Every structure is written in structure tokens, then in C-alpha cells.
Image (tube, rainbow, N blue to C red):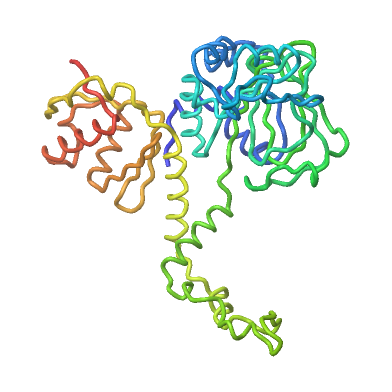
Length: 401
């Protein structure tokens, strides 16, 4: 699979001056890392406080997409929302001034710059991402110590915040293994890190932590990243195997094997006859692994909103072999070859092109801009048909020459 230079630059915004290679080798899923920059405006093109004020002023927002949290004295929903759970913005602001943290979940659905940012990062990582916003007044704390069941990048936009780390937690929890305050208790304090505007703080899933705004208000983006685990791949492979092999469709045992003379009591001696055979020699194939990973990556691509800029601008151009075309949003497209087929993933779409069309699209990805008639290996009819398909997918535009 290929990753464009633009995709790498989006990771650099989060990780610089650490390279992506070094980050994933030394820190990913292993240990927190604070990346200080001494550049308060580093994330200003991604989010500014004025965008949140505009959001509150122009859109009807509802709980729980927008909510208030406060560790010491939880805030009643009725104090900032009406009976239909619609947020009353000025009451929300009043509670914020009184020490509550404003949380906006899945903020990429509400703020365009975050939608673009999340789309590019998700494409670069090939992992599902989301963005939550936390606006905390000075001297406040939203949550008690907890862990997240997904990896997070704290992108500090404004002010500062101190993150405290504790013993305890869970080693790389699955995303369904949520924090439970009754079962998971924080141990002793192990480290405290203060992030300033423009800094990044990476926290692996399962690490116990809390966060406190000290002497100034704090605004940060929490970029949540959901790992694609070996377990996910195995489950997908097992699903494919059990659909293909009819033996897995049989019932696990014959009901009488579980009945004794006194009624329906499970017998420890009752062992399903076919299980040993099926589990000792599961008929997994290499193709199952490749198809499982492919399916999971497709799901990640389809989780993003499609890029529609320019899609309503006019009728489809009359392409000819002399037309000059340019690839749009090349940084958000990844390619994967499977035999004689090339699979292209971009936000909200998964497209398959058998050769020779796959080879032709590879040429366009490499050149970014080309004359239609210069496509090697295609007849004129194929060249024009490929233009038609790519235009309808909003992947290309016709250049004026």
C-alpha cells in the first residue's frame, strides 16, 4: 500500500520533530511521549476557540454530543439543556465559567477544519480516528483517573494542562474493554507532564491518567485512534472460514448428549465429536488473511465522509484523448494490489480496477497530471471510460490548457 507525501506531512504535524518511523518503533502502544514545540500556534489552522463560539451561536446542539463534566461537583443536565436535551449556549457558558469542562464529542462532524484534518490523518494511518474537544477553565478537572480503550493524541490548542499518570490500568485493552471505576483503581502517581499550546502528548490505550487545568484555561483536541489488532484480523478470518466451510454450520452437539437421567444437566463427559477435528486443522488459507485485512481496511475508508468539493460544479466534461486531467486529493488515496486487481481506498469510497485499468491509474497516481492519450496499455475507448469513472468518483478534474 502506498502513502503520499501529503499524508506523511499530516502525521508530521502531530509528531514532529519525531519521525513517524521512530514514533511507531519506540512509543506506539508502549509508553507516553510528550512532544514540546514552543510554538503556540502550531495547531491554530486545525482549531481555534472562535470556531467553538461560532458553533454554539449557529447550530442546534444536543446532549450528549455536547456536555459538561466536573470532577468535584457533577453538573445537572437541566442546568444547561432544555427538556429535549437541546443545549442552551449561554447557560453552558455560565457553567463553564463556574468550573465545568465543555466536551464536544465527534467534533469532526460539526467543524469543517476538524473533518478535513481527521479525514487526512485517518487516511495516513489507515486506522479509524475521531476527534473530541475539551475546553476547561483554569483550576479545573473534568474526569477522575481513568484509562482509554483506544490510543489518544492530545493536541494542545490553547493554554496548558497537566496530565498525571498512575500505576494500574490494563495492558492494551480492546476497544470494548471500557474503563470501569469499580474494577479499575488508580495506583500511585508515576509521572506528571504539563503540555503547552502547540504540544502533542501521546497516551497509549490502557494507561491510567487524569488531567488538570492549572492557572489558565485550556483547549485541546483529543485525537482518538482505534488500533487494528491481530484479534480483529483473526475474527474476520474466522468469519470467512465459517461461511465457506459447511462443517461449521452444524450444531455443536446432539442435545441428548447433555441430558442425564435426572433431566437437562450438563455432563462434563459430553464432548462435541467434531470439535477436535475442526479446531486441530482449521482450513485457513493465505487468501483468508489477505481478504480479512482488506475488508477491515475497506471499513476504515468507508468510515470517512466522502470528499465532495467540486462535485456539483457542472456537467461531466467531454473528455478526449487530448484532454489534460489532474488527480484531486491524491494525498487521501491509498492503493493495494491483489493479483491483477488494484484496490483504491479514499474517504468514503473503495474502488477496484482490474488491469490494465489498474496499471493506468497507477500512472496517474505517480504523475498527478497527464494527457488522457498518454495512458499506456489502454485503447482510446478504455481511456475515455476510465476518465468517466474517475470523474464520477470525484477523483479527477479537467485542466484548462
